[in-house]
Structures are given as C-alpha cells and as structure tokens.
Amino acid sequence: MRGIAPLIEGEVLSRVEVRRPDLRWPVPADFRQRLQGACVTGTGRRAKYGLIHTDRGDTVILHLGMSGRLRLDPQDAAAHDHVIFETARGTVALNDPRRFGSLHIVPTEALDSHPLIAACGPEPLGPAFGADHLRAVTRGSTSPIKTLLLDGRRVAGLGNIYVCEALFEAGVRPTRRGTRLTRADIERLATAIPHVLQRAIAAGGSTLRDYAQPSGDLGYFQHDFHVYGREGRPCRRCGTVIGRIVQSGRSSFYCPSCQR
DNA sequence: TTAGAGACCTGAAGGC
DNA sequence: TGCCTTCAGGTCTCTA
Image 1 (cartoon, rainbow, N blue to C red):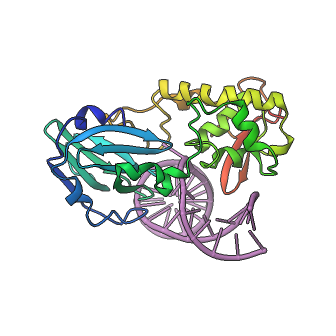
Image 2 (image 1 turned 135 degrees about the vertical axis):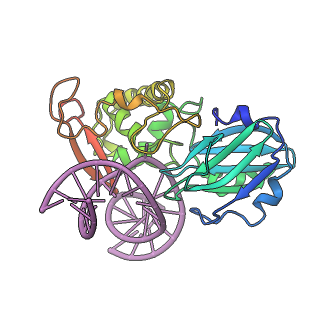
C-alpha cells in the first residue's frame, strides 16, 4: 500500500477496469461504477488487507492471496492483470496468477463491521499486542502454537514465513501446545514476532517466487531466513540440521536443537 | 466447539 | 525435450 499510495492518494480514479471478476470471491458487479470518477482520500492496511478509501464514502478491501501483486505503471498488459486502476499520476494493476486474492467494496462507515475486518485479531505491531495478549490466546488451547499464530482471528496478518522465523527467534518448537508454553516462552515470542516483522519490512519483504514490491523491486528478507525453506541445511546458530514437518497442511521449519 | 484436512488456481521446479 | 508430479507466501468450508 505504501508503494501505490503516491500514485492514487488525492487522485481521481479516471479509469477502473475489471478484466476478470472471478477472483477468490467475485468482484462486486458495481465495483467499477462505484469507483470510476471517485477521488481516493487515503489508503491503509488491516491485517493482510489493503484499504483504499474514496470521497464517495466507499472503501476497497484488497487481498493479494498467495501470488498476487500490485504493478505500478505496467509497460505492457501482462497475463493475470485482472483489475486496473488509473489516475492522472499513473496506473496500478492487480496481478494475481492463482486468483486467491480478492476485492471488496464496502461503505467506509461499515468497514469495521465487515466480516473480513471484524474477525481480525490485534495487529502484531500495534499497542494491543504483547505478552498479555499471547497469554490469553494460548491459555486453554491445546492447538500447536504454530497453528494459533497463523490464525488471523488471534493475531492479525502473520504468514507462514514469519511465524516460522519468529518461533525460531523465540526458541519455541512449532508443535508446542498453547497450554504448554511457559511465561518465559510467551515473553520471548511477544518480542520475537514484532522484531521479525520489522526486520522483514526493512528488507522489503521476502521474494521467493512471485512476490515483488509494486515498483517491481524484490524483497531481501529471504537472505536472513534462519529456518524457512532451509530443510536439511545446518542451523546458522548451532549447526543442527533444520527439520520440516507439515502442520495443518502448511510446512513448518525448525531447528530441533534451538527450538524446544 | 474446535482442530485439521481439503479445496480453490496457476506456474515453477525437479524427476524421469 | 517433454511429460508428470509436487509444492507454494492464504484462508474459507466441511467433517470428525
């Protein structure tokens, strides 16, 4: 959202084109009509949802799914450019090969009560997140901590990469049950989660396959991974071979020695 | 009520 | 070189 803000904030959406409406959920039939000619009054983010507010009292809720990206001023029409936003300053294309992403438009006043937004837990970089919240999340839950942290209702916007890396940094094995975490484990996790996110943001995110910033620049945080995608390679801290297990259908990478 | 598996869709990578 | 299989950054729905 930081990448596209300079092109659209304060600008009129002179053209909105929906080329493919069959994303994860169908793009609303009145999407183009409600946006074209509207002025973008601001942008924002909640969990993994990007937000675009307009002077017509609407807000676009945008999700990139797993393979989606926003392309700034694309020089040519690429395959999978499903929705185009054009202002006097440039063009933004929502490109998403797998179409796991989505676009919604809702009255801004109803944004907080929209099911997608209302279900979000506290932001891990916000004031409501901390050891007290994590203690409440894990108390009484027999789910593995990995599963708990990936659940956006408990903590907003944590993805598989960053949960794996945060668990490593905190020295907590992904299979540990919520009820089995100690006070010290929770304190370390409460510190590790925002720390990993801040490092990743500073590095421009993680480019593995599809991800790129709107400018087309790649992220570099993947070079700092300690465990994610490093199965069979030595731990950078202790040399033990990094392991991989599947939890809830997602790969979890961990160091059997550093994470207990 | 909760946890986990399956599904959605496409492309890249690796094996044969 | 080409075909087939596996896997992937997310999240909803269904089932046990």
